[in-house]
Length: 230
Image (cartoon, rainbow, N blue to C red; front, top):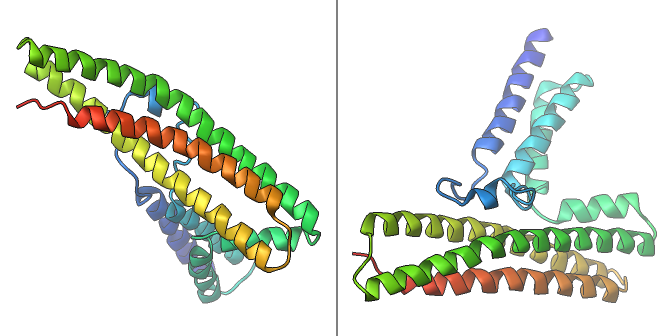
């Protein structure tokens, strides 16, 4: 029995570590520290697979410690991984927790508002960095026109700007995934006869805040593409 527990613990821990290592996203190398070391860096930083692997691995460990059979526990962990990949798990858990439609909607709205605040926080941090990048690009353009460009320094500047853009686009992609999940949840609740107009209003606010960040990123991307250093 002890050997089976050890084997299961090893496999579950492996699953957790795999999730942490294979979380996707882009490298933070060369990214402005103001983005990676701020309090907002953690927002929208985990991929669905990472959250899935951690949840499934811990679930498998808990199952085994509770006296479950090894095969059943591992199977449950794997199945749980598939469920946690989308919005359905969240929806099902809230329906189980709150049978009352109004109470459940209140929870949804609070969570959407939290996501909107997180996007706003990332946007504020990003704006300071991107404004600095725009100023750098303007200087580089002037240096190119006046033939006073230091190519080595310019390449270093552009490398960081490119890294900032890639980092923020990855954040943006995750934000849009969250938004799509909320749209899916609202749609499913509407099909069940729940009045979701207030929830849709909050989702609209989330969408607008995400659009602000996307516009900032697109502006810097456009200016960056105009700078050519041979």
